Length: 376
Image (cartoon, rainbow, N blue to C red):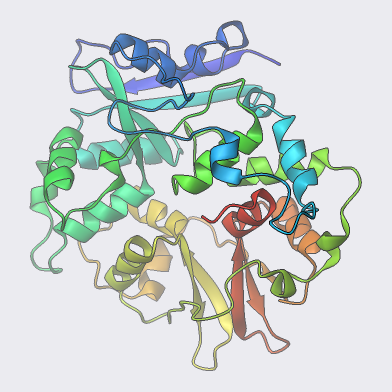
């Protein structure tokens, strides 16, 4: 494995440089025995607990595999055939999936919130660890979900603007989010991380149990699904069964919107329902597009968030590219759905009938949950 890694730090102060050697601590093959979070714990005088859980000082992280997954044997004494994927995940470490070259962006909590999101956009990253200089520790992760939370909290109307947002630093927002139940946000949450030597089953279970899509902005659900599938040479028979019969995906009460739905309504749905995308349908129920958090990213890039009462159709004008809407049938096999996800790098497939009307949705989280046998 190569060693071309870089870290970028952003702070309002020339003192207390952010994060130290973050990237080498996490990614550099010569320093693989030390993780970002382990460095933070050492700086803060905190050791990993006896159970092996490792988190920021604010909360606990993932436990061991047995705590979250249980045994491979079912209650009736029969071995679950999905054990082949769990076994495959146990044999691969997070270090095996690290890219040859990578960059980690670190944000100081003293940065203004609006500047922090602009840094994410300019560096083309979806999330970044947060560094608190006074504690000399990594205290959380910031992402587009937080951006949605901030917009949701400060937005009043197109006429009112969001001047108050300009005054808020990350640390001030964290304090507000911690004390005000009407200002929720992941900025106050723990930093979930994996060691380079952790196996992918443990990593997958942390991703699912903590409701996060990223560990240190490096490993995602897609990475783990791809690794698990590649590691299993003999596909088990259940992979030929349909996703509907296996119960993989959502086929009841699927949330949809129209092109005329106000953007602020969509942002509220994202946050309150903890979903990352919503199918857009026409008057006949035919899927015409999908609005996702990636589109909010483009909104941040254009700094076009003074008027969130615009329609989804208007908001889509800020897209830099028009992504494909990947679809499947609820009768497609689990194997074919995973193959499509792997080939397209899609985060979800929209299940449609023969007339292109929506009947369900299957996400990469659904797939990882199923093969890991964990309720997300």
